[in-house]
Length: 337
Image (cartoon, rainbow, N blue to C red; front, top):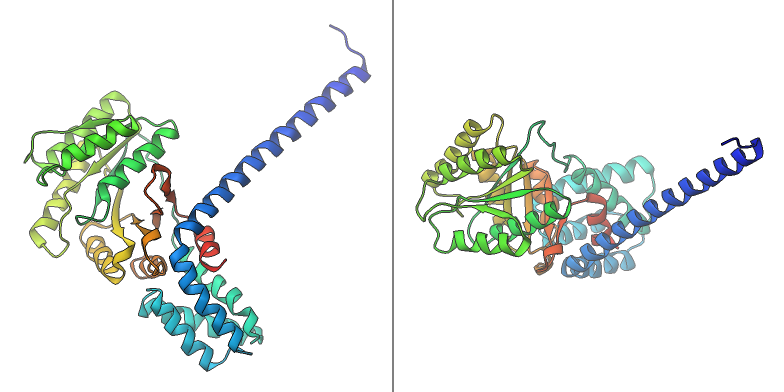
């Protein structure tokens, strides 16, 4: 078919317009998704936001310049939000340096300075995981009883499945009554497979079999539920180390992630748990659950700063979609909005 130059110009122009429209549609979709996430996180952090903002706004209203009195009151505010002593002192030191360097002490700039320094801490550790060159991606989930570990596994499985991944859940919490059934119930709810053995079976053996089965089936991801062990019990921590060693025998380099689930409402106790588990297992990430149930969401900043392990997801509600990937900017915006 022979076309004139003018016709070719019209066709090229039409294709150009189509590409622009497609680009705008993708851009708007991403913007809506980001807005939805920000809105959900804002609701999830409502208690922390309200507690923090009321006092911060009062501090700004009653002051003229950023001076020693403001630093002292800000210290009380940060500690009250469970940021922690060490991280609070770091934030205050950074704030002083910023104010001195800029020479601008206007109290209305306080929120801007604070936002900048909190982001500096949160962005110090990347949150994205690197997928291994060979499937499956093996995630070992750890945490004490009652923090929402099994529930988080179910929600993660749902998230990964929506992204088109084939997921296998491994029921390696073989000693707690009902743990295997609970995981199976979550698997049925979100529509993924489960590998389980009889109650009292060796947890490491369950993890080994799960990795081998997922490899044979060409599955994308294995999520291994482990016993909700008290982090103060040395022999039980040793059991988790054994699970980790055996997973590496099933697949070199596994587990690719060791994720600790902690309850944000436990405040400094959650920080202690993270410290102990990291020392024993070498954590690669954290999930903070029940963030919507506390007014002390500053623990997010304290844990990330003191442990140096990225926060991968946060739980801000009971629904499946309320387990969200953690993004530092969205968190700070929700906190200081």
